[in-house]
View 1 (cartoon, one colour):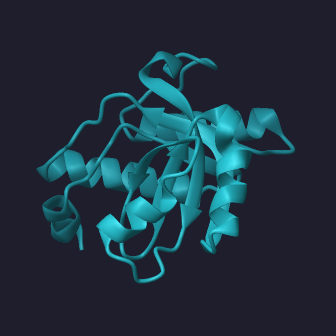
View 2 (cartoon, rainbow, N blue to C red):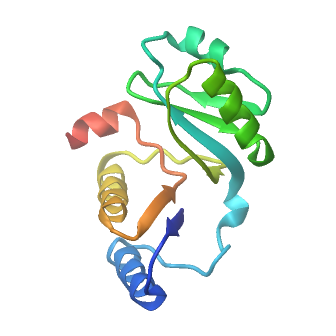
Length: 152
């Protein structure tokens, strides 16, 4: 996983993140250590505005868009990094309600943990999400609907 953080005290944040990783069976690597597992992308988060998956996907296929992840409660549109602002402007002009726009990373290969592994992954991602200095977490973990229901 890749973690983006903004902090006023790098040593404190690095120590806290190292603790979180170690506590959850991981290791905090050096900058760029897992970069080869991810692609750089532009990310646009938006509301599907009640559209079906097919209608939504068709409406957002503008220059620069490379993929769409649809969910009724919020969609993610991936762009080429250099095309992020062009795609954002085209989508805004088309009337799309955009909630966030940023550069990020997307895993090349996803893993799908089940059972105890899914529970541990969810707990770790939740702990990272709760940390005040963390802006974004990009992970190759993808929890299935069944795994998420089991955690509820």
